[in-house]
Length: 310
Ligand SMILES: NC(=O)c1ccc[n+]([C@@H]2O[C@H](COP(=O)([O-])OP(=O)(O)OC[C@H]3O[C@@H](n4cnc5c(N)ncnc54)[C@H](OP(=O)(O)O)[C@@H]3O)[C@@H](O)[C@H]2O)c1
Image 1: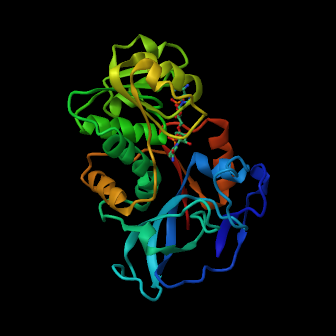
Image 2: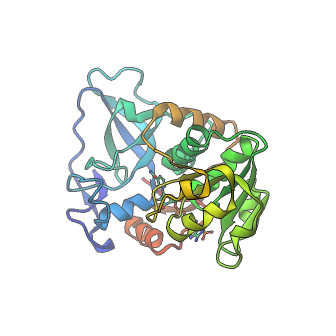
Image 3: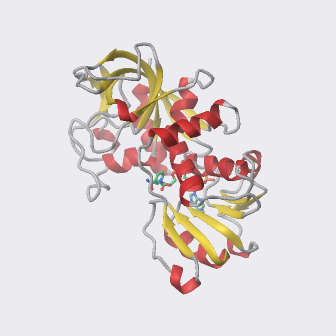
């Protein structure tokens, strides 16, 4: 099969497009013919060797944390699925098999049916980003109507979905984005947009919850905008220092794990048109190296790059 893969850690040049053996289907797995895959920050960080403290992938490593496609074969003991089902797949980072490929064999626990109302590209744009936003807003923060919420990075893939989830849950959402993206994040449901490269977000009124998707100095300055007893929810990005006790606020890491139930709940909102997938660029699979280079350079904005797999 055609795939993008690398045989050792390194810069974008180690990522090649070529032929690899077809996956071998094992018990409890389904074989998926992939149509689309998303390009996430984790993909280039893993390839660059920056995540070796967390994951040890097998080589040749096919990147791609998530994707969508159609089931073309069932392994023994694969219940609940049929050939022809449209599905989303989650590919855990330690496995050699990712979604930048024509086919993937997946454990059924990492496969979720894709509602007919959602295109393959839109589905690929939201599997992991939507799961991350849904777990953060619903499980970790438990956002309630009327709460004041600050979402950092509202124009990013996860942040843009978080803005939409928090708005849907009835919160009053303020978000940060680069200058020029304000109208975009307002269109996602934010009430206020603050340009992080021009204005100071710490002047806003006290918030019940802050979602930090940046870490570092942004995390540190976020304590000052929380009400006493407020909640700072963070996802893994730049390293943070927990100063919750000092400021009298709760600090929680959103623990993002592959969870089919959460993906189904999130996809249901997408299928109903309540949450809108955000696609920054559509690119062919063969251009994955270029896509990862753009992502690492920080030029990708307004959603995910989605790779189309012919
Ligand atoms: N398991 C986990 O903990 C987990 C899961 C998912 C994601 N993450 C992390 O969450 C972060 C966001 O992921 P993503 O997929 O949404 O990335 P993304 O699509 O690349 O978005 C990153 C966004 O960050 C924004 N940004 C850059 N500097 C900023 C600043 N100083 N203040 C506010 N926003 C700033 C940019 O906004 P503009 O476009 O407006 O410039 C950009 O859109 C990444 O670090 C990722 O690794 C962690």
